[in-house]
View 1 (tube, one colour):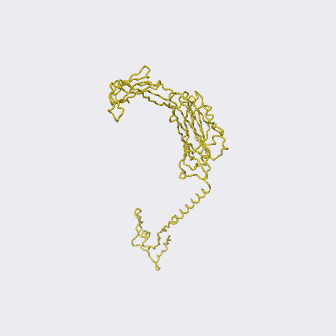
View 2 (cartoon, rainbow, N blue to C red; view 1 turned 45 degrees about the vertical axis):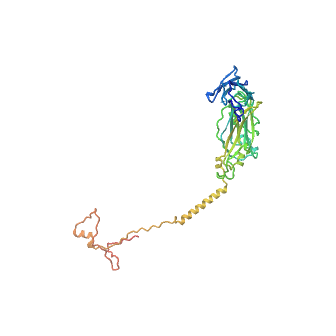
View 3 (cartoon, helix red, strand yellow; view 1 turned 135 degrees about the horizontal axis):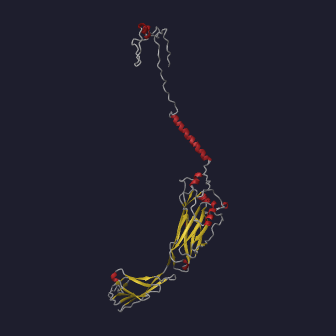
Length: 448
């Protein structure tokens, strides 16, 4: 912004006048070149001309430039000449006019920072781990399969800019939580391999060396590396059930716990891998095992645990203005108690005995309640009554056979209609009130 204002705002009439043939002279360093001019108001856009190598620019501000005027515009400069040795830029500005005015040059300085376009990302396979088995000491470990569940970390570093061999040496660091706060094993490191960053087909060496207990490597992993086949996800290894005397219920478990070296809940060992010739991408592979014994002893009453692995990039260079942004990542892994191991845990004998006794007590109370309600009483049904028949004496004159013999006519009964008895028929009783029986009539015993 160029102004033509009085030198003393308290006494604006003391000096100040129109500036005739006002110009702005700009001198650029060798690393910058003039490219163009831009103004917020197109009507105020000045006319700017440069020399052949675009290192000197002259801009016309007006003829005349009125008293109290202000002109704002932007000079567009090319930065193609900036190198990694460039730490500061200085541009000299000078106003010129044919009017009588004492003018002095002004220098504009800017610091230069070189930002590396490096990005880092990480992933864990699998993202959930389970612990089970029995508690074993460190001296009982022979193979990596004795330790616990397997986990693999992959950290990828990408470079979108120029090769690092022109800027310095970069190091990929991974902070591995190998112990909890009390010194017990947490994640046991088995192998560390770096692909890329060393030249075509070369693998970098990281320090310190993993597998300090020199456990035997799983034969399946060894065979896979020999054949150089891509690793496939394997089924989770089934370990022996835990020997906990009593399974902890879900309601009794505590809240989640985070094991992180940055929070002081874990101790880390830093694996550092140099990236000597890093052009586009490099991948760090770290294989480890979850130490089951520590989790069984310390975290069997915890709902879940979060284990944090951190990775970052550091650059060692003689360049002081080298800047590296967002060159770190966090890789979380969730750890749970194996639910199959909880189901398989043995129940103490006294728990089984108490359960049987409680079941018998409930059964006895149920039987007593049903007995009080009369559930076991048998229902009494009334005895069936059988009609009783008594014999009667029919006079001979009233008998059908006598009538047929006397008249000589046989009367046939109408079988389609019920037989009707004579309304005159009545029993003849003896003197004692019982029916009198004839010689041809036999009594019919009654049945109850």
